[in-house]
Image (cartoon, rainbow, N blue to C red; front, side):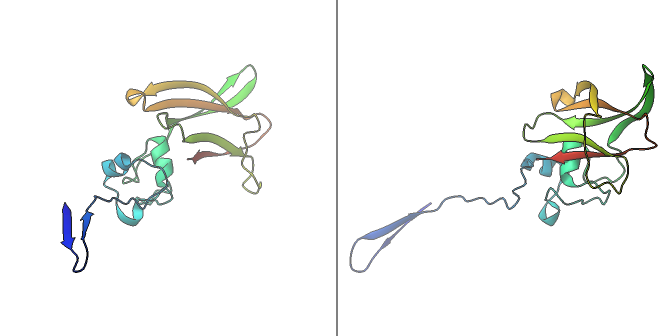
Length: 159
């Protein structure tokens, strides 16, 4: 739309309206992902947890969860196996693979009083199977359990 206005003493001013859009969310999650779950307003932030399951939207996005359903389990496998005399804890999860800016890294602690989470070479990916048209990969990782009573797992999801 163009609007022209005659000025009283000299010439005219012409203005053209433009369509402006504003996206207040700058966390990098695609608009299509938000829309597919109907998430709007204050809940539309990577750090929010609209379903109250303890998983922030970024984690749900990265691991193929549903941010509007608190009943999902994002770990797909949880077993132990003995290979060559070493006991390995195996765990699996679905990881988004179509977003190059997304990083998913399993990290561990032997005690919750330890200051830092770490890989320290004690975790390895043993398999990955593409699913959902290549949008995700079902991954299985493992870590050795010999010499420790327990380990605490956290999946670091960053973007």
